[in-house]
Length: 156
Image 1: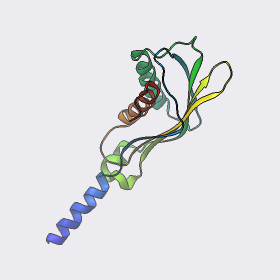
Image 2 (image 1 turned 180 degrees about the horizontal axis):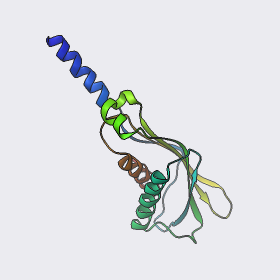
Image 3 (image 1 turned 90 degrees about the vertical axis):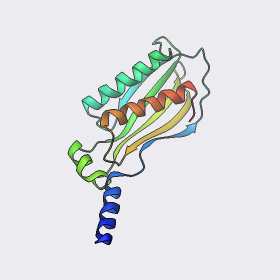
Image 4 (image 1 turned 45 degrees about the horizontal axis):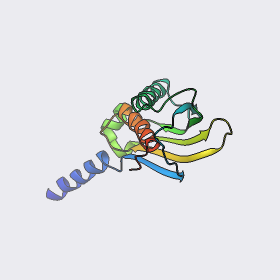
């Protein structure tokens, strides 16, 4: 009987846990200067849902404005290209956890000189949530936050 309970607990833990969070891989480093301002462009190559894209755009825009980093007349542009987007249905996430797959957002971020098109920085941002916990909205916002944190110079 104790073995059955132990197996049940282990299976439950497998279903609801896993490696979650946002990982950033810097391919070409960028060093933020306090006077730098950016415009931005978002490119969807992953068929992001309309609702998901709206959440990202709102969070990203709010972050840039709050940090006073955005100005359409700037000489630098942030280009965010979504290359992968998959979100589990809420019921699948709740009932099956990690066994239902993993919510996943992957984007390629380039910081470019607007006049020359030269790439000043390049990074890949991957946000995953295989757990039964968390929300789609929270993961998308976390993705936007990670990008703006990097641009601002917070390299954690």
